[in-house]
Image (cartoon, rainbow, N blue to C red):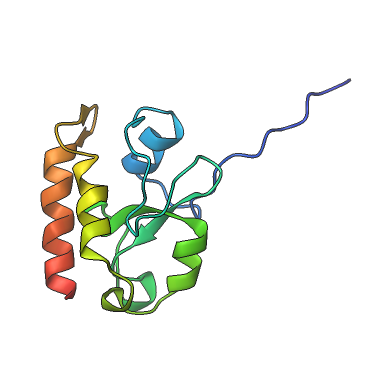
Length: 121
């Protein structure tokens, strides 16, 4: 039996999130930049924990942002304050303004990310 080759899918470290699902399904076409200002594609996109799991961070939406694998790996489990760029963060969050999808409210997401960043800095 002949099968078609499997196309590589974006990886997200095995974490499940509505953010990941919407991005993978192309339901967030306006999202082109990651949290650190990096260009996102389905091939390079990953979920980034604002508070690293090693430091007690959860996989709640309020602790997750999209970032390129390269930026995510560069940060590792280092403190957010060493990597954050406020302009890049603002540009990232602006992409979600007014978005409403099943199980996701962009305006609430923006507020929750701002609160998490405020707590961490």
